[in-house]
Amino acid sequence: MSVLTEVLEFTVPLLIIEQTLEPLRAAGANGCEAFVLWGGRLEEHGRRLAFECAYVPEQTTSRTSDGLLVVVEGDALFRVNRAFYERGLILSAQIHSHPTDAYHSATDDAFPLMTLTGGLSGVVPDFGAAGRDGLSGWAWYRLIGPAEWISVDAEASITFLP
Ligand SMILES: [Zn+2]
Image (cartoon, rainbow, N blue to C red):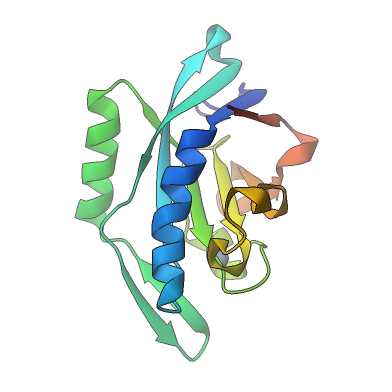
């Protein structure tokens, strides 16, 4: 259990989508995946999580025989959490890009950066090439237990705010 397990609705300002797509597309131009982390604030007695901030953690990307690998070191993750904490935000979502299809790989399941039960993971296809118009093609998952993710539609709604 965590503070996020009671959340029924996640709200995402489109500005955060823009701020997320920019680094994803920049990395994609070099054939690399990338991660962006979102901080949000609990509202409505914990029933709603309003995302307020997109943060690009220091990361290294490499190509391996299994595909692309993104690594965010522990101290970089600590800095993200501290930056969010200082603003009263909770690290509640991770967003990352894939070269083609948007889905949660076994590696994605097992090694998330966002580890709070009830939090979200979004996967962006084609390195975000479709921009904001491609938003409906993003795949969304929710963490329900250690390395256990479900499709978010079944559990909660994600609302995009202009
Ligand atoms: Zn992935």
